[in-house]
Length: 165
Image (cartoon, rainbow, N blue to C red; front, top):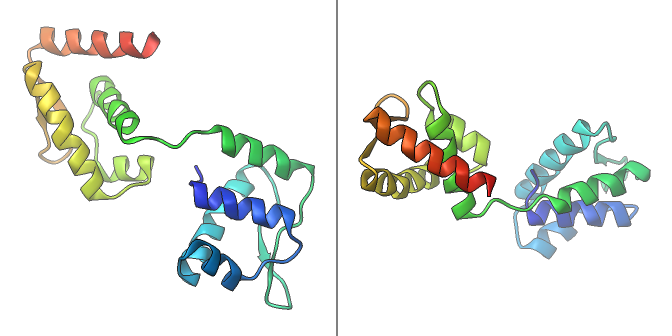
């Protein structure tokens, strides 16, 4: 998923024939390396939709050969709302209550495209909610829920019902 800055960069590429990295750096107040990382991520998304990537021209500028598909990808990307903190925590809870084996923090970091510190912060918040339901969040060598089966099932039903409503 692309973040707001990456979406704006994609829009710039789709509306301009040539783009200078320096222009993007100044516009967004980020380093040239960060611009290149963003372009790499955009190119990954473009590849999923079989769209030619952004490339460096002989003149040193960057280009995107636009076709009708690019408007489709921009619409799809815009429609995907960013994951809020609350939504991410709810998704982590759902992953935990439906997991049949331990979940790895690295997997959560990758899935939500966030840092270990952020995931640990989320888990500490989630842990408090689980404790209120007499469920233990075991984080030794992976993450898994422990407790009475009846408490686990009751919580699972509550959370899944919330998602369905």
